[in-house]
Image (cartoon, rainbow, N blue to C red; front, side, top):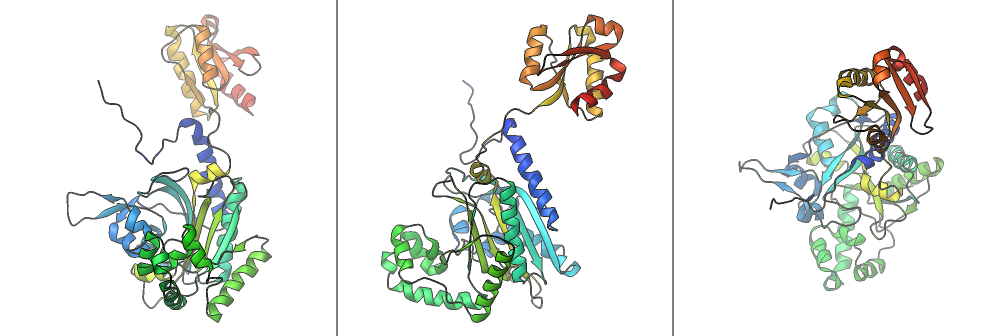
Length: 424
């Protein structure tokens, strides 16, 4: 018996009936991002593994547990499938010298990402993201943060996500983070043995990650002393400016003092968007500010960069919008010939229709009129174009409206204009 194969665990096929939803999502994303001045960028799906280890932090959960490395026959080559988009965008920004060309570069991207985590609803090993990054010497502005947050909520509104909720927090400057890290480690020392296994590791390597642990015991410990992060006056003023700008733009949000995000490179504004109907894993997107990442990846030491971005999970957006798949795609015309010798004429008709922007298909193996009309119905065709004995002789074609069953015979020479008129 021949072996049968199944889709790899943690991945899924996007079948034809679902494609219109994905296309609509991508189309809306492109239109809206471009209206904010963002340009599309496409990077490889794999990169030097050290790019991710340096950008995400060698001790982050993504690198520690989830990075999918590529096996290579050459020991000097180490690659990994991209677990997120930011590192690749920053690599491309620096490699292509955008920092020397323009004060602020605004990018968006759409594509697959990969993480070796336990698959669950809306959380796959291969998943797809819509992301945005704004990077440059003019990128350190609370108003840019507010623009990014406005953009993400605009996208979710257009995607019809149910009950989107924006949660924001500030981690302060790099110096703030270092100071707060020491303070957190000192406080958690009193409870270290009570923390879960993951948080005991986080305590050693990235104590901020303890703050958003979902373990009930860890949450109680965090709540006992963390009501707000002790930011510097400058960082607090920056965060207040972001909040004021959001209020001016009519964007609703809530402050989430335990929100820190899972990657090491974030500073200042961080955020997450949740939605209704997704259960405990209710996040549809997240992001934040990460200026120091450019220095870590080889940026000019004399340049002061500003950068902020976000990513939205496309599978989770479709779940949160209540759309798992759409009905079959429609096609404008299904061409039918009643005799095999009429196939050359029907094939020419197919070609003419397609050249003029009219979608068309046919059956290539013949059959009875009844079976061919059934196939036209299954193809969700709007019209059946029939070439029978009389039509072939008179150089005409019968046009049947599949929804009303009305039928008329027209000259073959005028079929293109007639179809365009009917399809308006």
